[in-house]
Length: 155
Length: 91
Image (cartoon, rainbow over all chains, first blue to last red):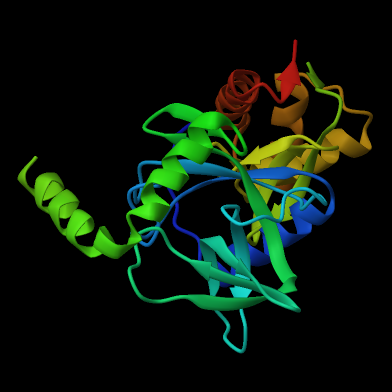
């Protein structure tokens, strides 16, 4: 009872609870799992605060938690393109793959991220810089990720 | 002791979890999960107005579970302390 434990919860169960909490107006803090948002968010190290959508929070560069169209898979990826009825997402750590989502399948957006214990808020200069630099590096993203992973492995 | 205002027991991911009501942030890295007996006690306190003493918890434990008074008292004191540490109850 008095111990601090780490538990891994299945995605489906987690998403259901997150949806409920966000609908009630809560924000939810989660640790990032997976490498698809590297290097903006690092697997198991960084955490994000997911908040209910606001009218001004759906922009190119916003990271959203959403269910992929026609698939039962939830993603925490960045909006890269606006569509008629939704958005196209791409993980920062992905060079080629993109995903399509419908607006109604967005659970919430990343209001702030804690990267290596330092908080970065959505929309701030630091947030935009981190994103813009990475975005314009897209043509050489694969090379940069390869170098990055090489350095991480040698650490 | 008293349950702090706004803190309620609810189901999160099929677990008994204590969260602050309203618009507060729920940190999945620091979630307060109660086991079945702790959740039972919490519910009893809730329906009883929110106030409790470790002695009262021990009474409830003896009544509900097949344990001796001494074990119940030790558990009740430990539990009260961990709730205090977690910041969900106040002296």
